[in-house]
Length: 412
Image (cartoon, rainbow, N blue to C red; front, side, top):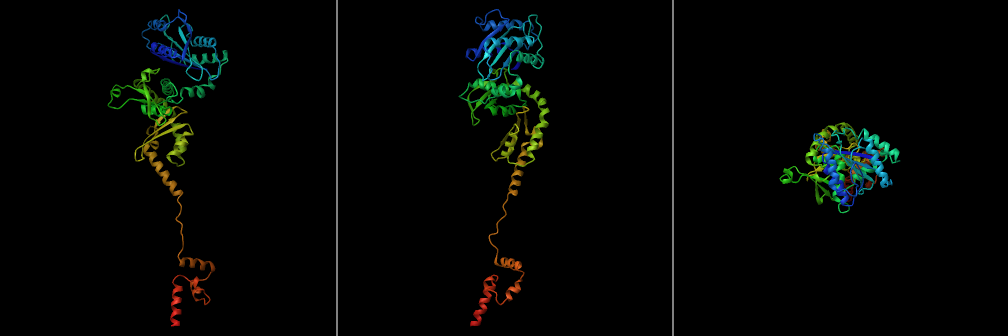
Protein backbone atom coordinates (compact mmCIF):
# COMPACT_ATOMS: atom_id res chain seq x y z
CA UNK A 1 0.00 0.00 0.00
CA UNK A 2 1.16 3.52 -0.76
CA UNK A 3 -0.13 6.46 1.27
CA UNK A 4 0.07 10.01 -0.03
CA UNK A 5 -0.89 13.04 2.05
CA UNK A 6 -1.69 16.39 0.45
CA UNK A 7 -2.32 19.36 2.72
CA UNK A 8 -4.14 22.43 1.47
CA UNK A 9 -6.15 25.52 2.25
CA UNK A 10 -9.46 24.67 0.61
CA UNK A 11 -11.86 22.19 2.12
CA UNK A 12 -14.30 23.08 -0.64
CA UNK A 13 -11.73 22.17 -3.31
CA UNK A 14 -10.87 18.80 -1.80
CA UNK A 15 -14.51 17.91 -1.28
CA UNK A 16 -15.49 19.11 -4.76
CA UNK A 17 -12.79 16.98 -6.35
CA UNK A 18 -14.25 13.80 -4.90
CA UNK A 19 -17.92 14.76 -5.22
CA UNK A 20 -17.51 15.48 -8.93
CA UNK A 21 -16.03 12.01 -9.33
CA UNK A 22 -19.14 10.62 -7.64
CA UNK A 23 -21.45 12.61 -9.93
CA UNK A 24 -19.59 11.25 -12.99
CA UNK A 25 -19.83 7.68 -11.73
CA UNK A 26 -16.06 7.44 -11.19
CA UNK A 27 -16.12 7.34 -7.40
CA UNK A 28 -18.35 6.31 -4.50
CA UNK A 29 -18.62 7.56 -0.93
CA UNK A 30 -18.22 4.34 1.06
CA UNK A 31 -17.52 5.46 4.63
CA UNK A 32 -17.73 8.37 7.04
CA UNK A 33 -16.55 8.93 10.57
CA UNK A 34 -17.52 11.80 12.87
CA UNK A 35 -20.57 12.95 10.94
CA UNK A 36 -24.08 12.93 12.36
CA UNK A 37 -25.88 11.44 9.36
CA UNK A 38 -25.75 8.26 7.38
CA UNK A 39 -23.77 8.69 4.16
CA UNK A 40 -26.91 7.96 2.13
CA UNK A 41 -28.67 10.94 3.70
CA UNK A 42 -25.85 13.52 3.56
CA UNK A 43 -25.80 16.16 0.87
CA UNK A 44 -22.77 18.22 -0.18
CA UNK A 45 -23.36 20.94 2.42
CA UNK A 46 -23.79 18.45 5.27
CA UNK A 47 -20.27 17.25 4.51
CA UNK A 48 -18.71 20.65 3.92
CA UNK A 49 -20.24 22.50 6.88
CA UNK A 50 -19.14 19.81 9.34
CA UNK A 51 -15.52 20.26 8.28
CA UNK A 52 -15.73 24.04 7.98
CA UNK A 53 -17.19 24.28 11.49
CA UNK A 54 -13.98 22.83 12.91
CA UNK A 55 -11.73 24.87 10.61
CA UNK A 56 -13.43 28.10 11.76
CA UNK A 57 -12.28 27.40 15.33
CA UNK A 58 -8.72 28.24 14.37
CA UNK A 59 -8.70 31.02 11.78
CA UNK A 60 -4.97 31.65 12.24
CA UNK A 61 -4.19 28.30 10.63
CA UNK A 62 -4.55 28.67 6.89
CA UNK A 63 -3.58 25.09 6.01
CA UNK A 64 -6.62 23.27 7.37
CA UNK A 65 -7.33 20.63 4.73
CA UNK A 66 -6.00 17.08 4.62
CA UNK A 67 -6.52 14.97 1.50
CA UNK A 68 -5.10 11.45 1.64
CA UNK A 69 -4.96 8.72 -0.96
CA UNK A 70 -4.37 5.08 -0.05
CA UNK A 71 -3.24 3.13 -3.11
CA UNK A 72 -3.13 -0.65 -3.39
CA UNK A 73 -1.34 -3.03 -5.72
CA UNK A 74 -2.91 -4.03 -9.01
CA UNK A 75 -4.84 -7.25 -8.58
CA UNK A 76 -5.57 -6.91 -4.86
CA UNK A 77 -9.20 -7.78 -4.14
CA UNK A 78 -10.53 -5.42 -1.48
CA UNK A 79 -14.20 -5.47 -0.59
CA UNK A 80 -15.85 -2.38 0.88
CA UNK A 81 -15.89 -3.49 4.53
CA UNK A 82 -12.16 -4.20 4.41
CA UNK A 83 -11.46 -0.80 2.88
CA UNK A 84 -13.45 0.87 5.66
CA UNK A 85 -11.38 -0.98 8.27
CA UNK A 86 -8.15 -0.06 6.52
CA UNK A 87 -9.15 3.62 6.47
CA UNK A 88 -10.07 3.55 10.16
CA UNK A 89 -6.82 1.82 11.15
CA UNK A 90 -4.69 4.19 9.09
CA UNK A 91 -6.42 7.36 10.35
CA UNK A 92 -6.00 6.18 13.94
CA UNK A 93 -2.32 5.54 13.23
CA UNK A 94 -1.66 9.10 12.08
CA UNK A 95 -3.59 10.66 14.97
CA UNK A 96 -6.84 11.50 13.12
CA UNK A 97 -9.14 8.87 14.66
CA UNK A 98 -11.25 11.53 16.42
CA UNK A 99 -11.40 13.83 13.40
CA UNK A 100 -14.39 13.70 11.03
CA UNK A 101 -13.43 12.24 7.66
CA UNK A 102 -14.99 10.91 4.47
CA UNK A 103 -13.76 7.90 2.49
CA UNK A 104 -14.26 7.73 -1.28
CA UNK A 105 -13.55 4.67 -3.39
CA UNK A 106 -12.22 5.79 -6.78
CA UNK A 107 -12.83 3.69 -9.88
CA UNK A 108 -10.93 5.66 -12.53
CA UNK A 109 -7.53 3.93 -12.45
CA UNK A 110 -6.09 0.49 -12.99
CA UNK A 111 -5.30 -0.01 -9.32
CA UNK A 112 -7.70 0.12 -6.35
CA UNK A 113 -7.42 3.27 -4.26
CA UNK A 114 -9.41 5.41 -1.84
CA UNK A 115 -9.35 9.13 -1.05
CA UNK A 116 -9.92 10.47 2.44
CA UNK A 117 -10.92 14.08 3.16
CA UNK A 118 -10.55 15.58 6.63
CA UNK A 119 -9.32 18.64 8.55
CA UNK A 120 -6.45 18.97 10.98
CA UNK A 121 -8.31 21.44 13.24
CA UNK A 122 -9.69 19.74 16.35
CA UNK A 123 -12.88 20.59 18.26
CA UNK A 124 -10.77 22.45 20.82
CA UNK A 125 -9.38 24.67 18.06
CA UNK A 126 -5.94 23.13 18.37
CA UNK A 127 -4.07 22.23 15.21
CA UNK A 128 -2.70 18.76 14.43
CA UNK A 129 0.77 19.34 13.09
CA UNK A 130 1.22 18.20 9.51
CA UNK A 131 4.98 18.73 9.51
CA UNK A 132 6.69 15.56 8.25
CA UNK A 133 3.44 13.65 8.85
CA UNK A 134 4.04 11.61 5.69
CA UNK A 135 7.52 10.53 6.79
CA UNK A 136 6.81 9.84 10.42
CA UNK A 137 3.37 8.71 11.57
CA UNK A 138 2.10 7.87 8.09
CA UNK A 139 5.02 5.60 7.31
CA UNK A 140 4.54 3.67 10.55
CA UNK A 141 0.76 3.49 10.08
CA UNK A 142 1.20 2.24 6.51
CA UNK A 143 3.45 -0.62 7.58
CA UNK A 144 1.07 -1.62 10.35
CA UNK A 145 -1.87 -1.65 7.92
CA UNK A 146 0.08 -3.79 5.44
CA UNK A 147 0.80 -6.39 8.10
CA UNK A 148 -2.65 -6.37 9.69
CA UNK A 149 -4.55 -6.71 6.40
CA UNK A 150 -1.96 -8.76 4.52
CA UNK A 151 -1.40 -6.18 1.78
CA UNK A 152 1.35 -6.02 -0.83
CA UNK A 153 4.14 -3.85 0.67
CA UNK A 154 4.73 -0.42 -0.84
CA UNK A 155 8.30 -1.21 -1.85
CA UNK A 156 6.93 -3.56 -4.51
CA UNK A 157 4.32 -1.20 -5.92
CA UNK A 158 5.20 2.42 -5.35
CA UNK A 159 7.67 3.05 -8.14
CA UNK A 160 6.89 0.41 -10.74
CA UNK A 161 3.11 0.22 -10.75
CA UNK A 162 1.50 3.27 -9.24
CA UNK A 163 3.80 5.82 -10.90
CA UNK A 164 3.28 4.13 -14.25
CA UNK A 165 -0.48 4.47 -13.90
CA UNK A 166 -0.44 8.12 -12.87
CA UNK A 167 2.17 8.96 -15.53
CA UNK A 168 0.52 7.24 -18.50
CA UNK A 169 0.66 9.18 -21.76
CA UNK A 170 -2.45 11.12 -22.68
CA UNK A 171 -4.05 9.36 -25.64
CA UNK A 172 -6.47 11.97 -26.94
CA UNK A 173 -9.83 10.55 -27.96
CA UNK A 174 -9.33 7.29 -26.09
CA UNK A 175 -9.34 8.49 -22.48
CA UNK A 176 -11.02 11.11 -20.33
CA UNK A 177 -8.79 13.99 -21.43
CA UNK A 178 -9.24 16.19 -18.38
CA UNK A 179 -8.55 13.36 -15.96
CA UNK A 180 -5.56 12.12 -17.96
CA UNK A 181 -4.02 15.60 -18.15
CA UNK A 182 -4.66 16.17 -14.44
CA UNK A 183 -2.98 12.89 -13.50
CA UNK A 184 0.12 13.68 -15.53
CA UNK A 185 0.42 17.29 -14.33
CA UNK A 186 -0.02 16.38 -10.68
CA UNK A 187 2.52 13.57 -10.85
CA UNK A 188 5.15 15.61 -12.72
CA UNK A 189 4.78 18.69 -10.52
CA UNK A 190 5.03 16.56 -7.40
CA UNK A 191 7.93 14.35 -8.45
CA UNK A 192 10.21 16.35 -10.77
CA UNK A 193 12.56 19.21 -9.92
CA UNK A 194 12.34 21.88 -12.65
CA UNK A 195 13.06 25.61 -12.46
CA UNK A 196 11.12 27.09 -15.38
CA UNK A 197 8.07 26.51 -17.54
CA UNK A 198 10.14 25.22 -20.49
CA UNK A 199 11.82 22.72 -18.17
CA UNK A 200 8.42 21.61 -16.88
CA UNK A 201 7.26 21.18 -20.48
CA UNK A 202 10.34 19.09 -21.24
CA UNK A 203 8.82 16.47 -18.92
CA UNK A 204 5.13 17.06 -19.68
CA UNK A 205 5.69 16.72 -23.43
CA UNK A 206 6.92 13.16 -22.90
CA UNK A 207 3.39 12.37 -21.72
CA UNK A 208 1.62 14.36 -24.46
CA UNK A 209 0.82 17.34 -22.25
CA UNK A 210 1.83 21.01 -22.51
CA UNK A 211 1.62 23.94 -20.09
CA UNK A 212 0.75 27.09 -22.02
CA UNK A 213 0.73 30.80 -21.10
CA UNK A 214 -0.54 31.92 -24.49
CA UNK A 215 0.99 34.48 -26.85
CA UNK A 216 3.04 37.26 -25.22
CA UNK A 217 0.57 39.91 -26.30
CA UNK A 218 -2.46 37.90 -25.20
CA UNK A 219 -4.69 38.76 -22.28
CA UNK A 220 -3.95 35.38 -20.74
CA UNK A 221 -0.19 35.99 -20.76
CA UNK A 222 -0.53 39.46 -19.28
CA UNK A 223 -2.67 38.10 -16.44
CA UNK A 224 -0.18 35.28 -15.76
CA UNK A 225 -2.86 32.68 -16.47
CA UNK A 226 -1.92 29.09 -17.32
CA UNK A 227 -3.70 26.30 -19.18
CA UNK A 228 -2.79 22.72 -19.99
CA UNK A 229 -3.23 21.09 -23.41
CA UNK A 230 -3.26 17.53 -24.66
CA UNK A 231 -0.83 16.91 -27.53
CA UNK A 232 -1.20 14.53 -30.45
CA UNK A 233 1.53 12.22 -31.79
CA UNK A 234 3.07 15.08 -33.76
CA UNK A 235 3.21 17.28 -30.68
CA UNK A 236 0.37 19.54 -31.82
CA UNK A 237 -2.25 20.86 -29.40
CA UNK A 238 -5.62 19.09 -29.63
CA UNK A 239 -9.01 19.29 -27.95
CA UNK A 240 -10.01 21.81 -25.32
CA UNK A 241 -7.41 22.99 -22.77
CA UNK A 242 -8.08 22.89 -19.03
CA UNK A 243 -7.38 25.69 -16.59
CA UNK A 244 -4.64 25.18 -14.04
CA UNK A 245 -7.07 26.14 -11.28
CA UNK A 246 -9.37 23.23 -12.20
CA UNK A 247 -6.67 20.64 -11.45
CA UNK A 248 -6.43 19.42 -7.87
CA UNK A 249 -3.63 21.31 -6.14
CA UNK A 250 -4.05 24.20 -8.62
CA UNK A 251 -0.67 24.14 -10.43
CA UNK A 252 -1.06 27.79 -11.48
CA UNK A 253 1.87 29.89 -12.65
CA UNK A 254 1.99 31.64 -9.29
CA UNK A 255 2.33 28.35 -7.44
CA UNK A 256 4.79 26.96 -9.96
CA UNK A 257 7.05 30.00 -9.58
CA UNK A 258 7.34 29.25 -5.88
CA UNK A 259 8.27 25.69 -6.80
CA UNK A 260 10.86 26.95 -9.32
CA UNK A 261 12.81 28.61 -6.50
CA UNK A 262 12.61 25.58 -4.22
CA UNK A 263 13.60 23.17 -6.98
CA UNK A 264 16.67 25.24 -7.89
CA UNK A 265 18.26 24.17 -4.62
CA UNK A 266 16.80 20.67 -4.48
CA UNK A 267 18.09 19.59 -7.87
CA UNK A 268 21.70 20.63 -7.19
CA UNK A 269 22.41 17.48 -5.18
CA UNK A 270 21.90 15.46 -8.38
CA UNK A 271 23.87 17.74 -10.72
CA UNK A 272 27.23 16.01 -10.32
CA UNK A 273 25.72 12.58 -10.95
CA UNK A 274 24.01 13.77 -14.14
CA UNK A 275 27.23 15.38 -15.41
CA UNK A 276 29.13 12.17 -14.73
CA UNK A 277 26.63 10.16 -16.77
CA UNK A 278 26.75 12.61 -19.69
CA UNK A 279 30.56 12.63 -19.55
CA UNK A 280 30.66 8.85 -19.78
CA UNK A 281 28.68 9.03 -23.03
CA UNK A 282 30.82 11.84 -24.45
CA UNK A 283 34.00 9.78 -24.12
CA UNK A 284 33.09 8.30 -27.49
CA UNK A 285 32.28 10.73 -30.28
CA UNK A 286 28.87 10.26 -31.86
CA UNK A 287 26.14 11.93 -33.84
CA UNK A 288 23.28 13.76 -32.13
CA UNK A 289 21.08 10.70 -32.67
CA UNK A 290 23.65 8.38 -31.11
CA UNK A 291 24.10 10.81 -28.21
CA UNK A 292 20.36 10.86 -27.52
CA UNK A 293 20.05 7.07 -27.76
CA UNK A 294 23.03 6.46 -25.46
CA UNK A 295 21.66 8.71 -22.72
CA UNK A 296 18.14 7.40 -23.20
CA UNK A 297 19.42 3.92 -22.36
CA UNK A 298 20.57 5.38 -19.03
CA UNK A 299 17.15 6.87 -18.18
CA UNK A 300 17.95 10.37 -19.44
CA UNK A 301 15.99 12.19 -22.14
CA UNK A 302 17.78 14.83 -24.21
CA UNK A 303 15.71 17.50 -25.96
CA UNK A 304 17.66 19.30 -28.70
CA UNK A 305 16.29 22.47 -30.34
CA UNK A 306 17.73 23.58 -33.68
CA UNK A 307 17.13 26.50 -36.05
CA UNK A 308 16.35 26.21 -39.76
CA UNK A 309 20.04 26.00 -40.56
CA UNK A 310 20.39 22.99 -38.26
CA UNK A 311 22.42 24.74 -35.57
CA UNK A 312 21.56 23.97 -31.95
CA UNK A 313 20.24 26.83 -29.86
CA UNK A 314 18.88 24.89 -26.89
CA UNK A 315 19.33 21.61 -25.02
CA UNK A 316 17.55 20.17 -21.98
CA UNK A 317 18.40 17.06 -19.98
CA UNK A 318 15.64 15.17 -18.11
CA UNK A 319 16.92 12.53 -15.70
CA UNK A 320 13.99 10.22 -14.95
CA UNK A 321 15.96 8.35 -12.29
CA UNK A 322 16.71 11.32 -10.02
CA UNK A 323 13.72 13.32 -11.37
CA UNK A 324 15.74 16.46 -12.18
CA UNK A 325 15.64 18.73 -15.23
CA UNK A 326 18.60 20.85 -16.36
CA UNK A 327 19.16 23.14 -19.30
CA UNK A 328 22.55 22.40 -20.83
CA UNK A 329 24.09 25.73 -19.78
CA UNK A 330 22.84 25.23 -16.21
CA UNK A 331 24.53 21.84 -16.12
CA UNK A 332 27.82 23.36 -17.28
CA UNK A 333 29.51 25.07 -20.24
CA UNK A 334 30.56 21.76 -21.93
CA UNK A 335 26.88 20.78 -22.07
CA UNK A 336 25.51 24.04 -23.50
CA UNK A 337 23.94 24.19 -26.95
CA UNK A 338 26.99 25.90 -28.51
CA UNK A 339 29.45 23.43 -26.99
CA UNK A 340 27.41 20.40 -28.03
CA UNK A 341 26.89 21.80 -31.51
CA UNK A 342 30.68 22.06 -31.94
CA UNK A 343 31.12 18.60 -30.42
CA UNK A 344 28.70 17.04 -32.91
CA UNK A 345 30.46 18.78 -35.82
CA UNK A 346 33.85 17.54 -34.58
CA UNK A 347 32.39 14.05 -34.18
CA UNK A 348 31.14 14.14 -37.77
CA UNK A 349 34.50 15.37 -39.09
CA UNK A 350 36.47 12.75 -37.18
CA UNK A 351 34.10 10.05 -38.42
CA UNK A 352 34.62 11.10 -42.05
CA UNK A 353 38.39 11.09 -41.66
CA UNK A 354 38.42 7.69 -39.98
CA UNK A 355 36.30 6.15 -42.72
CA UNK A 356 37.76 8.01 -45.71
CA UNK A 357 38.55 5.65 -48.66
CA UNK A 358 41.92 6.38 -50.37
CA UNK A 359 41.61 7.31 -54.08
CA UNK A 360 42.26 4.16 -56.13
CA UNK A 361 44.99 4.35 -58.76
CA UNK A 362 43.36 2.89 -61.85
CA UNK A 363 46.50 2.50 -63.87
CA UNK A 364 50.21 3.18 -63.88
CA UNK A 365 51.97 4.74 -66.85
CA UNK A 366 54.11 2.34 -68.85
CA UNK A 367 57.39 3.69 -67.52
CA UNK A 368 56.33 3.12 -63.95
CA UNK A 369 55.11 -0.40 -64.74
CA UNK A 370 58.33 -1.14 -66.55
CA UNK A 371 60.50 0.09 -63.68
CA UNK A 372 58.58 -2.02 -61.19
CA UNK A 373 59.10 -5.16 -63.31
CA UNK A 374 62.81 -4.46 -63.73
CA UNK A 375 63.39 -3.80 -60.10
CA UNK A 376 61.75 -7.13 -59.29
CA UNK A 377 63.96 -8.97 -61.79
CA UNK A 378 67.20 -7.27 -60.79
CA UNK A 379 67.86 -5.89 -64.32
CA UNK A 380 68.43 -2.24 -65.06
CA UNK A 381 66.83 -0.20 -67.77
CA UNK A 382 70.16 -0.08 -69.72
CA UNK A 383 70.50 -3.87 -69.59
CA UNK A 384 67.00 -4.23 -70.95
CA UNK A 385 67.60 -1.89 -73.86
CA UNK A 386 70.93 -3.42 -74.89
CA UNK A 387 69.62 -6.99 -74.83
CA UNK A 388 69.54 -8.14 -78.49
CA UNK A 389 66.77 -10.63 -77.71
CA UNK A 390 64.56 -8.02 -76.14
CA UNK A 391 60.97 -8.04 -77.38
CA UNK A 392 59.85 -4.55 -78.29
CA UNK A 393 56.53 -5.12 -76.62
CA UNK A 394 58.25 -5.00 -73.27
CA UNK A 395 60.04 -1.73 -73.91
CA UNK A 396 58.88 1.51 -72.40
CA UNK A 397 56.47 3.67 -74.32
CA UNK A 398 58.34 5.71 -76.91
CA UNK A 399 61.24 3.34 -77.27
CA UNK A 400 59.21 0.97 -79.44
CA UNK A 401 58.39 3.82 -81.79
CA UNK A 402 62.06 4.87 -82.06
CA UNK A 403 63.12 1.33 -83.01
CA UNK A 404 60.46 1.15 -85.71
CA UNK A 405 61.70 4.43 -87.21
CA UNK A 406 65.29 3.09 -87.35
CA UNK A 407 64.14 -0.06 -89.17
CA UNK A 408 62.20 1.98 -91.72
CA UNK A 409 65.34 4.08 -92.49
CA UNK A 410 67.43 0.93 -93.13
CA UNK A 411 64.87 -0.38 -95.56
CA UNK A 412 64.99 2.86 -97.44
